[in-house]
Image (cartoon, rainbow, N blue to C red):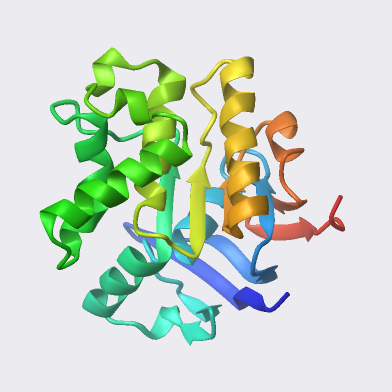
Length: 229
C-alpha cells in the first residue's frame, strides 16, 4: 500500500509564558493508505497533539508532515482549512452534535462549506446515515438518541464528505463496553470495506485490538511501533 501519512523529525513546542514546553520530540512515522492505527500512551504523552497535527488542526514547530504527498505543514490557513474539509473526517469523544438540529442536519453540516446544493446535501446525509444504520433516526434530535446513536451520527457526519482519512480522538470514551464494541466494529468495517484510513487515539487496549496496528507514545516520543496483528 502507498504511504498516506509521512512524518519526519516532527517536533511540537508550545510557549506558556516564559516556558517552552516540547510536547512532541522528533517523531518519525509512516501510515499506509488503508491502515487502521491505534495511537496509545499515558495522559500527557502527546497523542492528541499528534492527531491534531495530522488532521491539520494544529501546525508543527519543526519537521515534515506530508499527507498523500502534500506538505500540509507548509499550507497557509485558508489552504489548510480547504484541505481539511476535503480530506479529513473528525470523530470526537463528546460527539459535538448541534442539539437544535436533527441527525440529518447535523450530518449535512460539513457540506455547508462546499458549493453543493441543498438536495445533494440531503441525499449525501441520508446515504451516510444509512451506512451507520441510522436512516430511521434521521429526523431525531441528539437528545432523542442514545450515546451510541449520537456517536454513529458523528461518524456519519465525518463520512459525508467522503474523506480519505478518519481522525478519531477517544471515540468510545463515553460509551459502555457493548456500545463501544458496536462503534468499533463500524470503524473496522469502514476500514475493511471502504478503504478508509483511520487513526484513533485510545486509552483502551480492547479498543486498540480493533485496529490493524498500535503505535505507542510516551512523553512525546514514539517508544515502539509493533508489527500489524
